[in-house]
Every structure is written in structure tokens, then in C-alpha cells.
Image 1 (cartoon, rainbow, N blue to C red):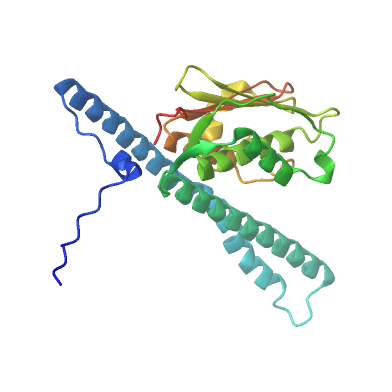
Image 2 (image 1 turned 60 degrees about the horizontal axis):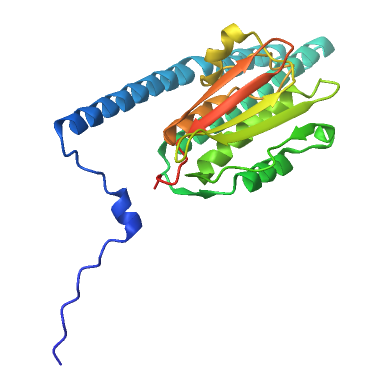
Length: 277
């Protein structure tokens, strides 16, 4: 029996949406070229930041491991080392252990950033309220039950890449919880709004925590950048860099404002209208 040759499959709507549009006019072509140049400049800046992080920031914990090892050997080389030598060697080993753990956490942070920068974008409708509640529930600890949460009564309908948005929210909410820990009556407020029909979405997380010097705000989005000593607050300085990377992947950005002793606000924005595919 004669069989009809199979017809080529018709591209589905989602596949068609992923096909890059071809400029139809010189003006459109110039706009596209300018956009690509901006993207390339951003990629170069990110590359420089990564080079600095790997060549400079990771060297500090590595130096501790490499420097204290020979000292431990020297202290313990006697058949029966003195008690004070054993105690000092133990102290050096603890420093080496902390440095190795910190370096491992830094590598984990770089891996998260790398995945956020490379994973394919998948625009989907987002239950913003549900996503916020999910992250708050995951981050809550016994010592954070006293936090007063102020959440929006309703949320705008938005689209986003859900895994990227989840990472950004987790980072900024975790920071808000961390830096309100020492406050007598911690308060965290979340607002979300759409600027115009089909326009940008702005989500802001404000806290009444310890804050910081506003003059240093811009540097905090860099990789491994911290405002407080490691002995005061845990972390390796990757959260805000991750939030910014996630927002930029979605065509938006992140910003931060604070005052010392008066809390902090982090704003995420992205074009989350229904025209996103």
C-alpha cells in the first residue's frame, strides 16, 4: 500500500516565539546592534569580575592552608612535642579547617553564579505570593519567628524565569533575615508592583536591620563582596551578586539602598509583562 510521505512538523507557538526576529529596517538593525554591544560589554565586565574573584579572593583562604601546614609540621616534628606546641598546632589546624571550608563555600557560590548565567530562560506565569511564602517558610528558623512580615495584600500577574526568580528572592530574603537578627523588633516588608500594563515589575524587600554606609552600596553586588566581618555575620558575599545576575538574565537589574543602623532595601526589577515568551 502506498504511504504518503510524512509532512514536516509545524513549529509550535513556543518554538516560533524562540526564533529571533530579523530586523526589517535600518533603524531596527542599529537598535539590535546597540543592544548586542551592550550585552557584550556586560559579559566582558562579568568576565573581569570572575577573573578577579578567582585570582584574588580565593587566594586568601588558600594562603592560610598552604602557610600553616609547614608550621604544624615544624611544631609536631619532635617525638614528644611540648604541650604548648601541640596547642598551637591545634590552633593552626583549626584555622586551616575554617579556611578550607570557606574556600569550598566560595566555589559553591561560583557554581551557583555560573549556572544562573548559563541556564536557558523559560518564561512562565508566576504565582508571586506563593513563591514568596515558599521562600519565607524555607528560611524561617527558631530565632527568626519574631520577625514581623509585611506582605502585599495582592500581587500583580507576572511572568518570569521561575528558577532564577526563586534564587533572587532567596538571596535578598536571607540577607534581610540575617541583618535583622540583632534588632529588638525585626521587621521585613515586601512590596510588588507593575509600573504599567505589560511593563516592568518591581519587587522591593525592606528591613530595619543594621544597615551599612550607603557610599559603599554599589560594591556589594560584586562577587565575594561583604560589608561586615565574617565573625559578625556568616556568608561569603555571593547572595546579592546572584540576585543581580538573575535579574539581568531576565532583562532587568537589582539595586540597593541603606543607611547605617537604619536598615536596607533591595529592589529587583525585570520586564515581567505578558508579552515575555
